[in-house]
Length: 417
Image: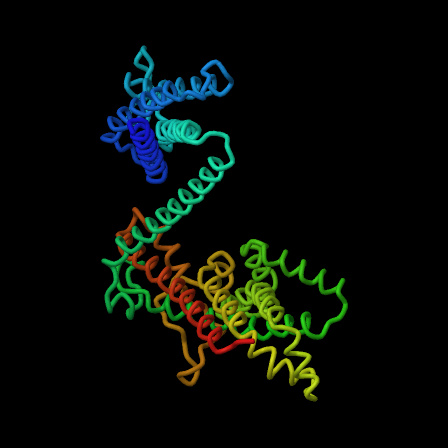
């Protein structure tokens, strides 16, 4: 029982060291008050691991494992002594006996050493708890998977919490419905929201027919397997091309014809989305059993009638999910539209006949609006509105993904084979 308590305390100390050091690295904050707790945790981890090793009957301290354990404990104690003696101060300055100090720019030295020490302590504790048997290795793997999953949830949840906590105070009816004023320090983001919506809509009008049509041809009509394979590989490669390359293409070719405009941005985002639409539609079409196609053809339906009446309705959940995911991707792109479509403006999108936007007009966009507010940080009081813009953008992307899940589940319930 006492040994299990020692293991638990060692795990707890290592976890505290890991989380707090990662927090310091991310925030680049000295967190002076936490250095005392680091001293206690480092000393406690060293003592608990040493006691656990001495009580481990199977462990030969003269073996290779024992030597590695001793070196690990020496490293942890060295980090402890650097902090305890003040050689490596809480403000991330290395001090020499002559009084000469050196400050390291990004405040990473001390928390990085603590992070390394916590990793070593965790490894040693796990090695002491689990021996080399298959059951122990399996338990260790499951423990690592659980820790990774929990850490991922905490990291992503922490990021989302920070965005919500800092952005919720900027949200108001005026913020959502008014254009920005005085370089974004006042007013809202209505022009950015409308510009984003029109641009994403234009991208989908451009990419959905081309992507779905190409996928139908490759999966249902083309019989050249080599050509299909080459096209699929090419589409996958294009899907991995950085979006800034598409922006460069827009500057080189589209600007000469359409200028910096909603149309140029929509075409660029559409080109980015086409590979996603093709790949997701292909997977959706492949999921339809061939027996449905054969049954339809046996009843006298033509190839197109089979595709239109049988294949497309059956694959609709996957197709719609891919389209909505491409919408989320398009709404988060900044680099390809910076030079082709957007401008930091409070002027709303001009409408033709009150319904159709003027596609030859530059527009504002949530991503570009947020980027400009970040540029203004420090010079203007825009931090509150910047966090509010980030929250609205994240909310739109999350809502789009939630819609994709709901649509997929709805059609899955309706379709069965």
